[in-house]
Length: 186
Image 1 (cartoon, helix red, strand yellow):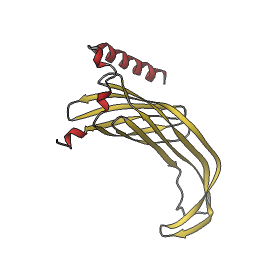
Image 2: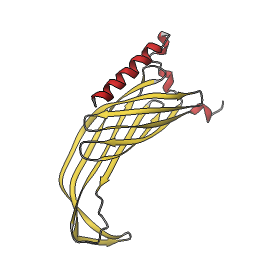
Image 3: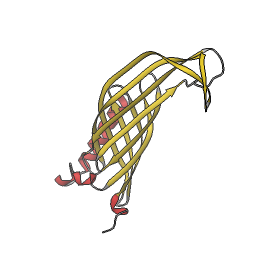
């Protein structure tokens, strides 16, 4: 983790040095007319999962979730342990340079530990359904930041890598952005 933080600081430093004009910094017009989607991997101390990102005109939303050990439809009468984790965050993107942007994010995390009880089951349209019994749960306010670096940048689209770190989880992935100008002609 320490090496990752050092790598992010080094990348930020090099990009800030490369910016030539004072207008290259904090240009919020970079957020105008832009739509992006991102996917990646995320983890907390208990469970790994996937993350999805939507960014429209600088307004940021992410979703993270995983259900580890899903034994909802097992036919045995054992108890199958598992986790159920979900979180969401919102924020607004602050472009530091044309290639680097930081998004402060606020959100909520919900974490449950429990088991599927194979002895207590029912039937629905999907077949056998084992009951989920929650033994521990944790819901908390979550906060952090998304750091995005544009690997490829043109007038039509951008390809970026991102790192998300919050109090309870972290993640990384790729993001693909399009300009609304490509779809709307005046």
